Length: 182
Image (cartoon, rainbow, N blue to C red; front, side, top):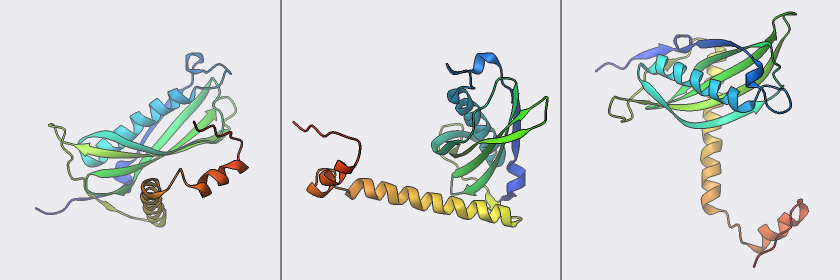
C-alpha cells in the first residue's frame, strides 16, 4: 500500500470563543482550566482532521500561560500538526486574545499536545506522513524533534538519578526546603 502524505496546512484548525463571566477564576481572569479544556478540544480536532481517525491525548508536553485573558475578550486558538511519528502527532497551538472593542491582540498561550490516532477498536493506527512546505513547517518539525529528545533525556534521568545520594541531599540545602527524613 502506498504511503499517504499530507501538508501541515491540511491540519490547520482554528476556533474563536468569547470569554464570559462564567469562565473566570477567583481573581476575575479567565480560568486556566477552561483554557486547557479548549486546548484539548482543538488538539483533538486538529489530530483527527489530519489523521482521519479518532485521537486521544497522550500527553500535554508544554502549556505556557504568558498573559491573562479578560472577560469579554475574543480568544482565538490556532492549531497545526508540527510532527508525526507512526501513530502519534505533536499538535502546536497558539492562543491569542483580542479586545473586540479596540482590536488589540495579545499572545496568551503556547501549547504542545501529543495526540495518538486510534481505530474503532481503540488500537493505535498509522498516521499520514507530513509534507513540510515552508521553513516555518521545518522549524516547527525540528523544534518537535528537540522536544522529543529532551523528553527522552528527562525519562532516562528519572531512571538513573539517585535521589538518596549524599551529594543530592547536600545540593538541596541551597533551596528553600527543609529535609526531615525519619
